[in-house]
Amino acid sequence: MAKAGAISALSRRFLRTDGKCPQSHSDAFTIHGARTIMSVMRRTIRSPADFQTAPVPFMHSDLEARGLTEFALKDQSRFLQVFRGVWVEADPSSRVLCPPWADQKWLLQQVRLSALLLLHPNVIGCSLTAAALYGLPLPSRRKDFDTHVISDNRGRRIRRKAVQLHRGSGFDITEFYNLPLVSATDLFFELAPLISEADLIALGDAAISRQNSGPLTSLDQLREKAAASQYLKARKSVRRALSLIRETVDSPRETWLRLWIIANGFPEPEVHPEVKCSTVSATLRPDLGYPDIKLAIEYEGDHHRTSSYQFGADIERRQLLEAEGWVVLRVSKRTDMGTFKHILAIHLG
Image 1 (tube, rainbow, N blue to C red):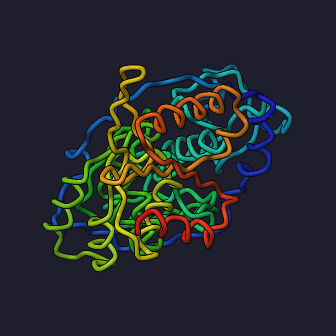
Image 2: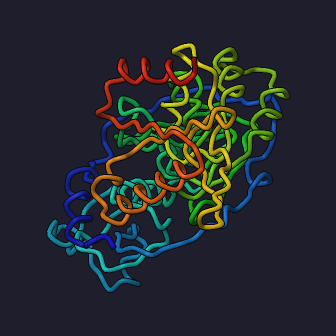
Image 3: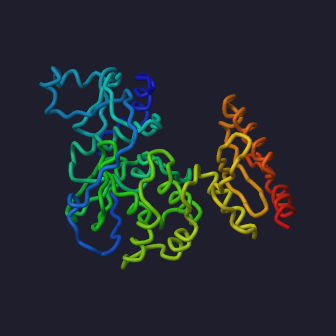
């Protein structure tokens, strides 16, 4: 559960803007050339929910209902200005709806988008903001604290610090924990020109899997959208990515490992191959594998090392796989990939 003091600290660092710095950006965003009304294309993602302590933005018109005066807003120990005309409590007690995996960065994005929607209720979260709120993986160089929104109103202007306005039409809207976002399907194509092919594959893997609040879309939906698109940016990268996106991937590092194996000239391993375990009458599914030669490859994140429960489960899992005649290779961020390439080549002949 997020602590009020921690949220307050984040608010003081990132939320205080004076609303006077014009910074408006416009990016054409048309997925398939169709002219549609945004509100017609809404759907809701129904996922496990949690509640965490976070600020709830309010406007000047809410002062009387809150029993506040304009003078009270000048007390920065009590209130912080998100945008001109929108404030939050510095030490909040409100509980907001969020995904079970939400962290303080997610809450920060939620607060900023919620605050902007009070001022511009018809915009939709998009681009990096939507990706962060969906919990989709992004390269570190593409993470920022700007709030990205899109509108099909060509005449709209938003001149607020750390807000980027995109313009476009023909996109679907998803209600995600009470936040209007472009659909994960459209987001995939919006981000395609901005990130590398490998990062796009990792994003696609996450969007169609059960990572975080997924699946948010499906591979069929992505392929159908690409086939129907008249104006598809980064078409070559998109097509390549769609050919390499796989279902049931558990993490971006698993995607990275699979792509590394392919890039180094080895056959593509199967994602989560089924291994029938007679010892305990169960089915095991290693991260990657080659069932024909009974070779499993596991990516070990830091939690495999720091969690005593996970460490014990990994030992048992490996023993069970080996009892069925499988060889298990393990990779972590500290693995010498040159050595691993040599070992893998020996096993794959």
